[in-house]
Image (cartoon, rainbow, N blue to C red; front, side):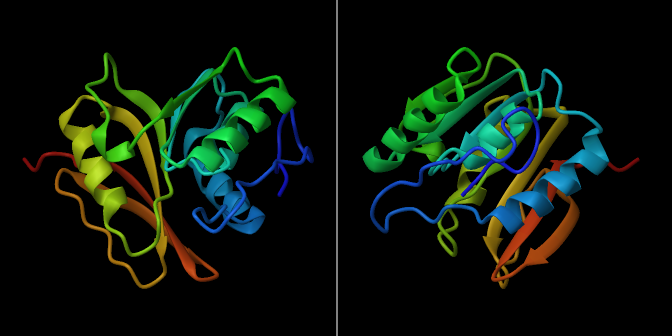
Length: 184
């Protein structure tokens, strides 16, 4: 597993030991960041969260492309160790913060983030639960883009959000979400 583009392009990332996490494949990350780049233009100074972070590959990819900061949220101990190892190896410590805990139990945010990357276990429903909570707790504003990775057969529906784009990649599906614009 490697960083796809940006400052750390080609640098290797370690994955957590064991079967508890499913690292996002390079092809899936390439597709996701291509989708995001066409909408955001630049990642410069964006505030990012990588939820169900696993190895931290998604958040580190955003940092490599210029994001200003990334919060990595993960509850698996082996995954947290892998994230910290990757952050140290890339020298990303000043722009990265790791929070040990469940992405479905986060507290209220002071301000909305620019980009939220959500990669929960497939067919668990926890990604939608986490995003719904973040929406209620101020993490998501009009400028926020949310990426949710699910199994290809999963339907995504979160009250208050609209699907801007979906793309199937292998056995997975990427959904880009935004705040729904009120009718009228």
